[in-house]
Image (tube, rainbow, N blue to C red):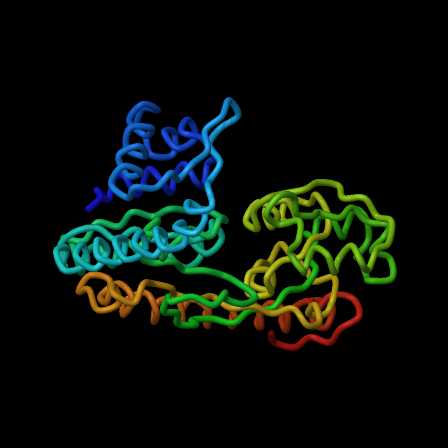
Length: 320
């Protein structure tokens, strides 16, 4: 019989291509990794790697066993995760992740009230535009804005729908004139870099302005929206946010064919953990109420004192 830690070392070397890379991934020294791989080879009676100066290459047997080892790894992670869920109960922590925009609008303002109701629950909020691996245990609960969710074993509940349009600040429109789709190429465009480069709203904007160069690139939606709000140029923003901001004005109709949703996502074995269940039951109505308030504010602004002009060029004033 072999040691589970030996199997972890085998998988890390297989994935990293060397005992050095595996030692960094596992947080142990290189000698320990090499010793564990050798122990596994002896226990199995098989040579798993061809070793050379450039690293470790899987043998035919090693390649065949990687998939089976990954099944053992997944089972071990599932066992540990389920055991942890049973142990923690109501008292303990919830690791919650959301992007910066969702955290600012829908999560952080609610946490003080949640803590009053459940003082024994510690919330660890991980704010990142990167989608953390919920199945792998990087977080317990995610509130995600996405055009669609990937297939997985996770449980997901939709809490809001949203659409996009192009916006600029009212100050920008006063300085440069109100942008329209016909004049878009003559304006400063605020685009997405890194994670946002492929965002459909960004791609659609530049497709309407062939040859236009971005005035600036941002890798988070919250910073892109702030750049537009500060008067840097025109950019795609969720209508839920843009319509409710009195300093912004629409420069386009809703972007066709591009809509998304906010989802609460968690692992199946955590959904009935008392503190996770309490948090989900608390945050869902809070988000619903926040969305309704933003929609009502946006509709009032777009139908308010500015009249049809509040809708932006080329469209009628109607609620999102």
